[in-house]
Length: 477
Image (tube, rainbow, N blue to C red; front, side):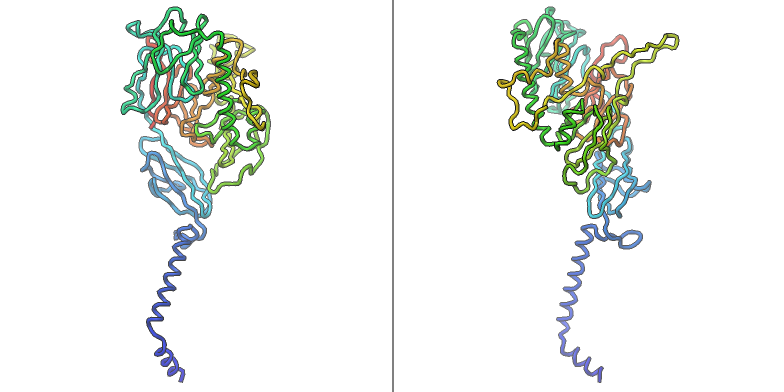
């Protein structure tokens, strides 16, 4: 009886309806699984289907490097890998380049990017100048260096030159420095001081006998330039006001707690090239409150330091609200040369350049409704002007670059910092990881400066006592 009823029911149901329902169920189930798979909610692993996975985007510059996870070769960059949440030892290697490695934390349903920058193990060295460099200054935009040479042949080639740090031409290293002023006996260019205007369009040349403005874009006849001695302070005040306005705009993007630390209990504060990070040295103990901004997904998972101690060097990232310690002043200060054992020790150490030069921010009034103006408060823009022109020049130059302080310098990508450790050029990521040696000296005056596109480092060196010091480009990419 039951079989007869089932046979009757089967006859009443149209097979096409059954197939339609089955197809719809398969499509709905497949779509749901595909969505969950794409979100990383379920992944097929060695243990079967694992819920709540994260995505690792293993990319490198240059690409095509090997990716090792927990010492096991997994894939090559650029690739994406689904991993269960947790910490992994990640290493990216490529033949001819220094390895990149970090401990990364994979979070469920989030994408973690490596963005591994790989640097050459054996960089090449290319001369940029040939007639000697005896005095120099870098423009605020980082695109030009003015320098003086007195050993050129013929003598008419002695004078002031501009080295352009750009890649406008196909072979930038074959572009020779451009002379902007011939030597003049009445100007003591060997000991001259240079101050660049904030927009890098003018250079104030200061000597004991002359004070003039140079145009870095053309040939300047020194003897024909008007002396600006009587309005020098006014010009410098106007330049400082321009620097103050820019600094105020950049600093206003940071949380109030960071602004307070940067302006009251820190020194040597430098914005990253993209103005999203601050490099600074703490001068007093302080605690950075947590959660100054809403947390971002897949932010940097490296350990941070929010308790500040005097002398500590830190980087604050305003987009991720992360604060990383890079080291201390003692780690990057120039060490005095060792004295022979037969000489008595000196009880009082001579001050180093790190102790003599510091940078203080110009902005102290960010919470005012209106910025200061030169006409209303001219004294507000005399912070960088000292009793001597030499110290004034050092104050302005130190404001624009940390090179003179012998501390870390920002790399153009805003993700790395470079510095000299004895006779070694090194680079480190802003979160304190991946310390890498780029080049082993010698260096003169610890001078190293990055090319604007980050492919080269300009150094100042001499390979024998008989030859003058010159600029060289160290190819690191």
